[in-house]
Image (cartoon, rainbow, N blue to C red):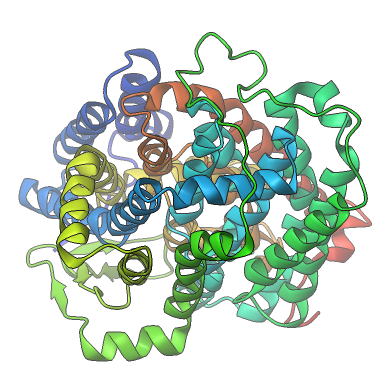
Length: 556
């Protein structure tokens, strides 16, 4: 048994600096040294191993097993999603179906700002709600690059858009997990998050278009942005407060898409924006795919081109249903305790009320994984497009070769994140936020942001820091549900800078080895939006009328 230590240097400040070294090393490699993503991730992981073993005193074998568990998690479920989504994209591209899909989207509007709004925000939010775990960024970025957007625009803007929906992603998994693991009331928690994120569901679409087209370009299409954001935010509030967390994003996204498409039938911007490069990034945007002229297609051709994506949407939604997941897990879902790590690490106060052994079990939930649903959709879609079995196998082999480095990178990133969790490095960083006293609502929100930036998952961040939020809130006499929700709401803004999301974006756009460019583009947006969430939570903690929004009991 090994007990975690949160202040190994007997100096909270020094221990915090040392605990931050692995993440700093990885970010330095990506953004400053411009290392390839898998090299930067390996650099960060090596630094984490040194700190965990020689500073925190974690047994070397145990540290290696924690990294191994993280790598397995990176490959399934996350890498499995990316592999199969890129496989489907390749199939549709080779048959010309993807070009027809682009033409039909362009038929809704030729304006790049409005295409971005429809695809990255609304359509991406639907996939976040149905699948999560990288799927929305992969789908949005792939569609945008096909429409002619530069790689930087397709990658960076898809990441910015995939923020406000994240807390209710994968059919409410982050909220449900936070409530289950740390004893929050799931109804109250869902309602509280639904009283924080709608502000940002209105703001993020404006922010997204501003980041792409500038202030003037944004104001030229403000009515469409407002319709998209307000409809999403309104249903996000209503569903989360009166129905629960499961279908918040799915319903909100469908309503938002319908509202935008309907609005564009009666309203058009005075100037059509045809630029595909983010404002101010013309020199470093990379070589985007030239936008091809839009063609008109008859109904039968359109239906055939959209069929694989409709199949994908339906199957991903079905695969995400709890009853389906439970059924598939009942057929095949073996669990593998990691010997030498499982229940061998003990977390202690103040993170938990009493010493708690950490489980380390890898579940091979292959059948119920979202990536499996995507693979089934890709195979069915490929057969409808005229591929034979040999053709599908050949294309899958080419896809695997294309994304092999990205899969390695994701595995290394998750190895780093998992090691920081089991070694206690992340808890040292969290405790630094928790020591901020009256400013805790602000910095506690940033704790959630840090958790997602480290782990790549709002769910993982909630597991990591949800208990600490509860303890700190109790000690500071703050509403417990407020800070639990703040962990998830603040976390969503870390989604755009977490390494695995950036790798997903670069893979989906084919812009390999430019992860540092994407990180530099989105970093300011992530910090700024996280701070705004922190200010809102602070207002909800101390200032009327915001305090009246705080949910203290289920339904209250």
